[in-house]
Image: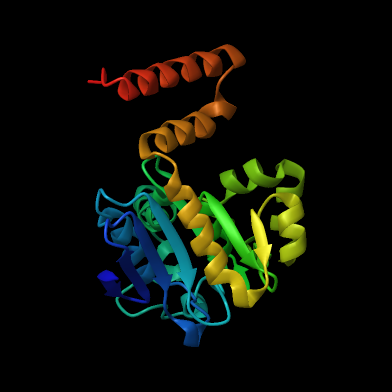
Amino acid sequence: MTELLNRDGVRLALEGEDGSLATVTLDRPERRNAQSPAMWRALAAAGRELPGSVRVVVLRAEGKSFSAGLDRQAFTPDGFPDEPSFLELARYSDGDLDAVIAEYQEAFTWWRRNDIVSLAAVQGHAIGAGFQLALGCDLRVCADDAQFAMRETSLGLVPDLAGTRPLVQLVGYARALEMCVTGRFVHAEEAERAGLANLVVPAAELRAAAGDLAAALLAAPRDAVIETKALLREAAGRTDDEQRAAERAAQGRRLRDLAGLGE
């Protein structure tokens, strides 16, 4: 294992000889991996520093909880050291506030880019920002003790860390609205039924199950995976005719590449 980053509660490491598998680890177990702007910057840096050899990224967390969400210190008058408090942010201009939130969102958005497949291994609580971070990944393997909750609305806020679109895509508008507005816990069994979780396993088997799925994802040829992921990601925004045309174009590229005729 080669460690590439270790700061502010985030570790990034490469596994294996070819560097095709990366692991991002949330490492604040004493705080149940509660998140802060510093952690978000470290997560964004992890995305930027991924070598081109990486095909699969596993997101995991130390301790009993995946992430308890935003660190409660954010809600105090002083906030975090050297960071604007929520009260200060409220006084920013629209443009400045938009820029700050956009910077925070970067930690949650790179996981779905087409050149990688990302997989979250979730145990215990995944609340608020923790829920949205898991939603940022392509796939989720959950321990049977996993509990998801979107608590922002209950606090008078909204989920603003890029989690609303994948949540609606996974469970539908009505269920997403109910989950967000009530802030209730969605346990692992329901998460699997609703489409939030690809797989639920006993907590003791979570790391092995995530490893097995990562290995299966790595077994397919990389370019075919990239093309397939792009087709699936864009399918909802296309008409039937547009999607069929995209399939034909992608298959043409694959056939030419396999025949040695690619550019």
